[in-house]
Figure 1 (cartoon, helix red, strand yellow):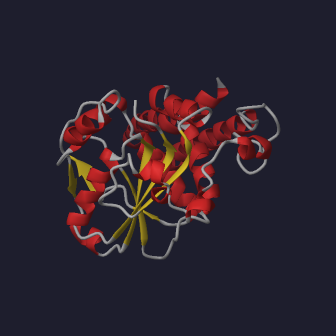
Figure 2 (figure 1 turned 135 degrees about the vertical axis):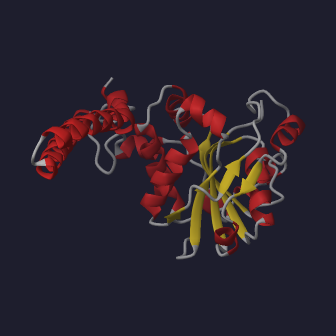
Length: 280
């Protein structure tokens, strides 16, 4: 599919072609009397080809994922389908889902002050999140970030001191999967909101089992003491931290990460998520 091709292009082809380019550069510089000129020529050729591929692919996928209609603000969704998604009406609860008793009662939130989720964990967002994570549909990270930014501007109080970070995954999990979907969404979200993104505030030093299927108590035990602050000075200097996690279920993972940030000197933390899922 062209959508998958765009994700693959952004994540792999540039890497593969850059490796091929490095080999060409090495050969060209060694064999040519005009090493610098050869290097620049090869780089220009590589950049032109990559830019052309991106340009062509963008136009091929510029139709709505849901209705195949014409898109405007984002190449993967039209304004009508964007408006039809069932979002949380955050303005009715002072832009904080923790003010909703039914949600606050089952979310672990001792260590963060505000919870903002885009929508319930249902189609189409649940499908997109799953496709991003398990089918490597990387273009969906930007779409989800775009939808989040469109709704968050009224709910998230952003200042020059606001720092956004993502819930990290363990290095072994990263090596297995090749990416952290929360990082991909958070990085794009920071760009849309024009706020600072710091991906290395936290690290996950404990290998945990997947949270799916675990009870609330099991989830809390599973993630206990699994995070560590990697930049304590930066954490202590950031009065407002926004922590992104792709899906919130019981809040155990986000709450544990926030506890670690608070111990590292963080003041106020807002947890942002694409969806809120009921416990299984």
